[in-house]
Image (cartoon, rainbow, N blue to C red; front, side):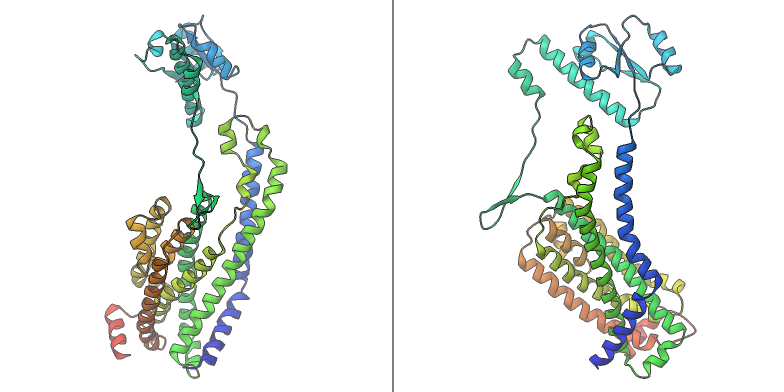
Length: 429
């Protein structure tokens, strides 16, 4: 096997694809799409305003309406002198959005309050009104129980959890579990999409050269195994180039977006905590510190994962004469990726669970699951090392099988192979 020949095939594959219009457009459009996403979200936040909602309150207790008025004097209006028929007509005439009747039963917990409304406002309106009613009825019950102000404060207070991470060296650091979970999911998702995208690109490249009979000319001077390795390495180098560009663009855009969004959106000017939560907080674009080893492991597992799966995709391409014929072979290759993708969600929730640990050690799942675990939690080095070793062994075995199929398949024309023929090719090789 000549490494010079492999290098030539790699260069040809890489330069041909990187100069293509489709590759250039895809490389540029993804960062532009991210910029557009930030712009659209920011624009919608600045433009979106909640409509004025009027809820009539018929309060027989004479205690709850004043409390609601203190919460929102615009939303809650007094309807003590109106009958229920009059309120129903006002709702149907769209003069008010809805109404609530309060009696002593609501304060005594014998009955739940009931809102009769026109149906507009959505779940956000219902949730907001429910929270307001919960506050005022609780306060009234405490008032009637003649509890002290200290007890009232206890009932009205909430508890937030602040967390810090203690390293093995005993140092306290900021806990960025939420952010790192997002990074872990992003890395796992990138690998999932890359296996599909670049694997499919490799399959199409093999089919194209085979159907155009270009491979016959190449095979006269290059061994099939050299051609296989060169094509896999060429597409792999293309993938690393594109993903590296996207990652750098993502961090660059995120760093630039924070001050820009900060100038446009001032959280202090947004009324209501729920609106702040649903709006754009400039802090969301500020990037916390990340251990560089996370990205080192991402590259390692990406390369190993791509190397494993690319052998399958190349073998499939050599066994068929058109893309439509690849469907019969795709399911066994795609199934492990889909399974790993579903395990990924469990890993984000609990990276140290048995399913997550075992999934990260299974070679066909490792590229997706292990990178996510490494980003979120401290994975023992023996697990990382064992995962890498198992992936390398799996790659060697997959490469051995794929080379036998590829050797026969690239020079077979006229009819796509089936599983029985593939087994014959493996035995012949």
